[in-house]
Image (cartoon, rainbow, N blue to C red; front, side):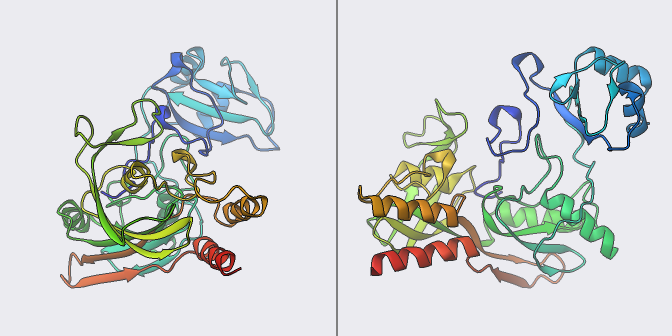
Length: 357
């Protein structure tokens, strides 16, 4: 489990940046997108039930018709009946009353940065903007889809249908992840994560000049009482789960601070919620109201500077910098460090130059 282990995959907590082409209203809550198709430009007019049967031959025509009658076949954002005839470039989505099995993973040729691989595991340095695992609104284009293609192409023995992710990080968080390639490796690594025996450090940019060079933030983390898109720190322990974040200041930029974080627990959005609680929201973290100038001066030059930095770093400034663990087979320690990604590095240069001038 990691700082961002729960990725808000259900429709109630969808991020505004997810690629969902349809709206799920109250009547359709609990429905999940099982199939999303862009109709071929050379497609001849064809009834939607016959069209879908060509894609889902393990389903009966009657079942497809019933799905249409229930209003759960969506074309270009609107439900259609079973006699609707598909046209070239139509966007077709099928919604069913249970989520798709996670073992239906489509291999996709997506570039990923693999820093280590053997028969038991693979370590990836994930770029920001990539969702880790398929979920509502992101059934493809994920790290798992990319890995499935990589394993297929290289003949690797890995069953991503049943095993794989030991931990996750958010879409816009960059950095290191380990993925197991067999059941034994998954169990062995998962135990280390559960017992907090891995070596992981995060780098974060937070608004303001953090007072202490080192410190610890303690407070239960649960869902925000008003904003369900956020997690919230309950210092009285009345809600949520116990959470502890240790931090150390690496560099100060007067109105922004670069901190290194070590997690004693692994709650959802732990770093983001804890630093917002102490008044130092992550830099450009839109979900937690960090995408406006929270510190600084009210001068046109400074406002333009912040705008320029946001353009350089168009996501929350959080990076999984290190990853260390005991290998499941060799029992030797593996340790990896991910350099600061270009967007964060460019932001640092920009801040240094601003302060010097």
